[in-house]
Image (cartoon, rainbow, N blue to C red; front, side, top):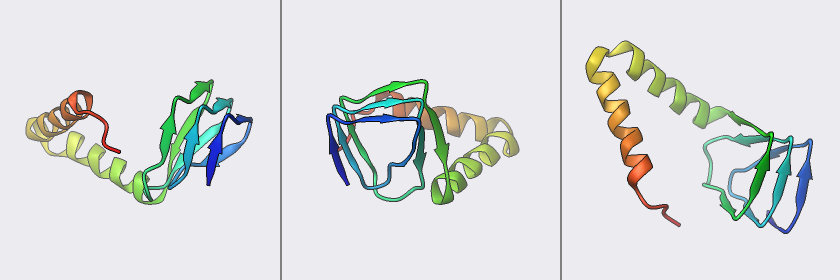
Length: 92
C-alpha cells in the first residue's frame, strides 16, 4: 500500500511493506510484524502506540534474553548494537 498526505485517526495500521509519505497518525496503533521494512517519509505521529508482533516480537524477546540472561557481556552486546543504530545512516 502507498499512502500520501493522508490522516489516520484512531486506527490500527500494519506497517510492513507499506510506503507512507507526508502522512499524519493521530492516536493510532502502529504494528510492525517483521516483514518488509516500511517507509515512513516525513510523517507525523501524535499519541500513537507501537506494537511489535510475530517475527518482530520474537526478535525483541531474543534481545531481552541476551540483555538480561548473558550477564555483562550480553548488556555490552546490546548497548553496542544500540550505539550502531543511533550512529548509522538510514538505508533505503
